Length: 122
Image (cartoon, helix red, strand yellow):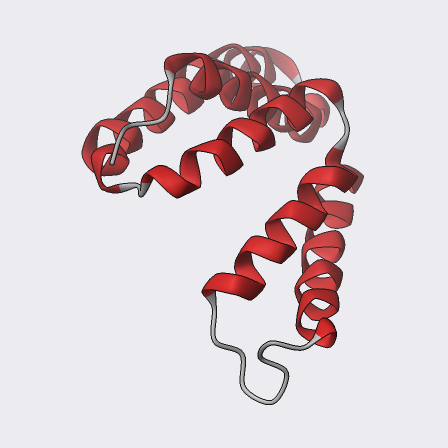
């Protein structure tokens, strides 16, 4: 078990910072400037703090998935990651009625795609 690499944390925090900046774009005046300026370091500190606390507990099999997530965030190619995450979740989570069937992957993929669509729309 190992922590997430600092490069991966940087990529994820940069992407999160851009997303939060979009949300804060309509905050007027000095408050908006301060919030948009402070959100990047805060996100980075939170991700590094979580990584320091629980990073060593992350199974090694998750690290390639997390690294792929960061690479897809950086390139903007979320479709490949969504499929990979759906396959991973289908293998790891026991889903009643559809466990071990192609429908299980489709179920996870549809939920992940819906969440990603909502996040992209922000």
